[in-house]
Structures are given as structure tokens and as C-alpha cells.
Image (tube, rainbow, N blue to C red):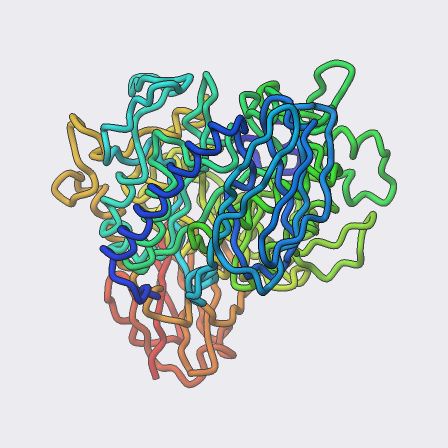
Length: 638
């Protein structure tokens, strides 16, 4: 999510694991569940209950506790009873709002799947059929994300329209598409992404990260997804819940993982939990509207003022994004259960967490613990757009002692420090490759920096091709760094075909992918639709991305970097199997001659090398003449 200028303090100026069931059987199973859910929903609506969250649950969860939030007119006055083997009613809780009731259940390990009849005795006796499902038995279903992956980050609304029938959904607050407006919906959807799985795989991509796919029924700029209005529903303009389950299944069958983008800190102002709040303190309250100060420094400042940290955590991100009060146990539990629900329901592989530091620190630790207890293989990485490596490492698993009572247990973060460094290194005037060395020098602070996600640009910042003056040679240097440095590489959609613009406003860097929509003048998903430069960029990414995919040394190999000298940055990836890749980046405009003796501790035993992308042979490692504005990715040979 976009951060305000005040928050930029200190930053640079700006089929892998196929399921046993065949596809047809899985789709039939999902369709059957959908039909059954529709029947249950109709019966429950007749009972006078608007909804219960979670919408259904599973037996056999490691945590037997289940807390239901019931919503319906005057439901808070009801008494609840049940009779279901293995399920114990541990009590109910009335809230400030009489339209809500909390039910606390214990679902023992011996409980069988089925329909749990919840009887509500009040002015009108009603029974609600709550579904308890069987957990998936596929241990490889949630695969996790790691440094062997290559992530493609996209905005579903702007990538491709695969199903025009869901472009306009009756009853939504924005029920039209307008591709000539950067704030309107454009019609992209899940089917559009799926239609281009082969395109992604041709670049060596192994994981897809869409911006949030949950419902965002806001009246303006709802396309980005970061102001959710229903925690338990996919936005119908992307597809249905069942279609999202199928999307994840199909991705897995194609050897692609799926990352689910989530927002913990806030929700959209048209969320039913804001329109009819369960409690007065469901969101943070202020005498008058109060924004966050967008500055996380007070969180780990030993001399901090409580005023500053409270304003950061409890202030609202924006007028349309109510700030959730995660210190309220009901709120915390609601969010934790929701994101366990999405994992078990879909089999997704990882979470990217928007505006991670803005949430309550105790809640963050509880959230991570609860999810990883159920799904140890799950990967999570947070957006911590901060001003230093130390500040960034504070929000990931690190070597720090607890600071102000907080000890992060988040596996990884988006690496904004290396992002700022690569942008500095690729500048057309006065490039500074030393920033790349410095960005990694601080990795000693992390428990494991290879869990961090590295990137050159994203939906909140100017596109890298524009930042570096539309210089293809320098962009290829960036691609080389992205796909060979430590961590998990992430490519923003369209960078591989030279999409450009500055984020003034953000919509300019969130343009439609050419060829993804009916009537587009060109189709850049194909070589025929791209011009010569675009094909050169795409081919470079494709060759290096597929090389990375088949060479573990670039995925899990150790890294050794040498202090940059005369504008040239050199580093090595190597492993115990004797594989070594040498990367040399010359940021100068002119050719440089490099004495290879300096790198002897990594090149000893090797006599020659082959450049991975071009196939050119380097016959001697004693001296190198590397052209200006060039990166070499050299596989060393004995």
C-alpha cells in the first residue's frame, strides 16, 4: 500500500506438487460444496440470522477453540444450545450491539464432519445449520514460498479479463467498467490470470502474488483491493469463492504457487463490521478523525514517547480505512480465524501482509504463531517500508533482544532497503553500486535474510524503467541482480515488457497489461505483439529466470560479495556441490578492466566461464574486460 511522504524518512529519494485427484474431480467436488452451501445459506437466512463468521469451519484443527460471531436483528438477546458429538458450548457473550452474539465452542479431535445445529431461543426460536468440514489430507497442499521461487506480482483488475460476464455485478457500489479511468474497475479477473499461466512459466515464474482478491465494495478506487468489505468473500468481479479455490488448484497443477495479499491493520469503511459495529471499540476511536503519523521509528526507540507510538499504531491509515483495534481480543480472534480459514479453504501457499508495522505488536506475534502452528510450511512476508536495515530487520525474525516488549516472529519482509539500493545502482547519472553491498552487509541482523523478498518496483512506486531513464542496458543489469542476489525475487507485472511511468498518481503505474483485454491494439503476451526492445527485455528475463529455476546454486547457494571498486560490484553464489556463479555489474558508461586475482578465494580451481544469458565464453579468469552498463552472470567451469 502507498505510504505518505512523511513515512519515507531516510529512504532513497524515491507440476510441482500435483494433487492425487484429477482436475475434473476437484472441480466437481467444489461445485458440490457450492451447491450445498447455497442450500444451507437459504435455510439460515430464513432463520433470521444474517451471517455467522467464520462461515464454516473444519474438524481436526490443532486449536480446538472456535469463536463464532453471529449477526442478525436482535440476536444478542438469544440463548444458544446445541447437541453435537465432540462439540462443547463453552459460553456466549453479548456485545454492545444487540445485533451480535459471540459463541465460544470447543471442537474436540474426535468430532466428525457434519451440520452442527445451533438453536437460538429468544423472541423467535430459530435453528442455524453450521457446517463442520473435514480437513484436507494432502500434506503438500500448502507448499510455502522460499528462495527457490520467483514471484510475479500483479493487479488482477489490470492484468487480463478472462470472464466478461463478471465485469458488472448487480448490487455492487461500482457496477460498471471504465478502462479510460485510472480509478475505475477495468474488468481483469482470476480467469484472466489463469489464461496466462503459460506466459508466466515461460519466464521461470513459480509463484503468483495478486493484490487482494477479497471483496472491496467501496464506491471509489476499489480495484486495488486494500479496503476490504467482506473478510470471507472473493470480490465477485474477480470470481466466486469456489472459482478462487479452483484457481489455486489449477495453479498448483501447473507448478505455480499462490500468495494471498492480506490487510491486518484496517478494513474498508463499507465493511458490515463498520456499518454495524459489534462493539464500540471494534476500531480505534478518536475525538475527531486522526490519521497515523506514518512513522514506525517510535516502536523500537528506547526513548520513545507513548504519544508517537500510539498515533502510529492507532491512527487511521485513511478516512475510508477504519483502523482495527487488535488489542480487543474479539477483533484479534476474528482476524486470526479468518486467515486460518483462507488457508484451509483454498490451500494457498503464502501471505503477503500489507502495512505490517501498523498493527498492534502483540497481535502480530499472536497472529503469526497461530497460523504457523496450524501450517508450519506457510511463508509470510510483511510490507515494512521503513528507513534503515535495522528498522526493517526489527519486523522480521532477528537476533535482537525484545525491544519495548516486541520480538518479531514474522519469517520475512519485503526488502525495501535493497530496493532503494538497486534504484541507486541503476541511476543514469552518478550510479552508486556500493548501496547494493551495504544493503546486504546488514543481513547479520536477520535470523535468515533469504526469506526476504527482493524487488525493483511495485504498485506503489514509479516503474523502474522510468526511474532509470528508459535505459534497457541498465534495466538488464537490474534483472541480473534480481535473479541472482539472495532472497526471493519478485517481478512487478509488465516490467519484463518495459511498461513505464511515474507514480503521480499511482494509477499511472497500474496500467492494463496490453493484450489482456478485448480490443487491445497489441498483445504483448506474445512475441509477435512486442517490439524489438520489448522482446529483448522479455527474452533476458526468460533466459535468466529459467536458468535460475533449474540451478539450485542461485536459489539456495551461499553468497560472497566483494566491496565495489571503481563502479564495479562483484559477488558469487556457490554451494557445497562445487557449483559457482559469478556476477559482475559495471555501472560505468565505459568499459572496465578488472584484475581477477582479487577474487581468487572463489575462483581458485576454475579456469573459464560461460555467460548464462548470451552463451559467450570467458576463456580466462585472470582478467576481465566488462563493457559499460553491463552485468555478467558467469557460470564458472573447471
